Length: 67
Image 1 (cartoon, rainbow, N blue to C red):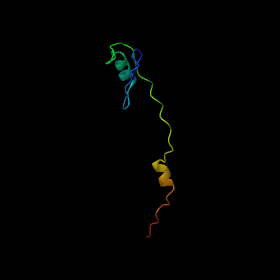
Image 2: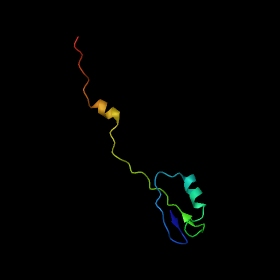
Image 3: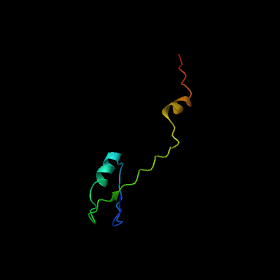
Image 4: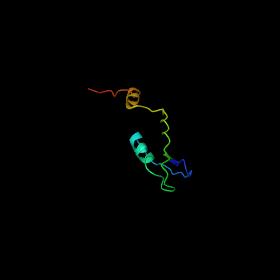
């Protein structure tokens, strides 16, 4: 989060919804009192290579039942 007037910035931790960012941007800057706060858009999540459970199950041979 950055103030457009005094250029002071703060780190935003966690996942912020669009509504939460708008609520913060509508408040005055804690440093200078100007209504120029700006929250950057979150970076899109990167797709990770993930193995799903069904790929693990498909790669295992079924157990033989002796009868």
